Amino acid sequence: MAAAIAIDVAILPPPEIAALAVALNLPLAAASPDSLRLDDRHLPHITLTQQFVAADGLQPVIGAVDDVVRGEGPLTLQIAGAALQGDSVWLTLGPSERLQSLHARLMHALHPLEVRGGAAAFFEGRARDRDVEWVGGYRTTAAHALFRPHITIGRGAPPRDVRPASFPADAIALCQLGRFCTCRHVIRSWTLAS
Image (cartoon, rainbow, N blue to C red):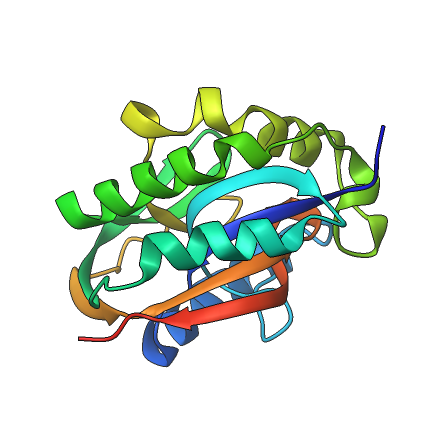
């Protein structure tokens, strides 16, 4: 198998929303030493697509993302609350046709560039079997009609005091994924301009 890299094309939320996600993650991470931790090296994010691509083929990936986001204006998104999804706690987002469309267009544009990958494709070669399975199966288990936009904040009980909040979303990043499918390394970023 050729060398692969595990990528996430994601929305990086504005500082106040990222700070909220980090603050909500702290008690969840403290309760479980080997769990998701959010900070400036493990970026809170809203996944648009995840997959494995050829490590030596990032230029076509960058070009495909560039083609999709060019001319796309900023989005207005809304945190709807916190919820438990499986054993993960999410900040859930309200419905957005533009977000769904952006997700679908990225899935379509990047499909031809998808390859098989393993743990070595993740940042520092560190991944759980579950991370590898999630990224490898993203297209069939979490995309299109199954797409549920969210910010993962950890494992445990969802916080009860999360209030709905609207926020602007204009930062898109192509990231290498790390353990727990965190955005660990920003390869390229884009700003959605009005």
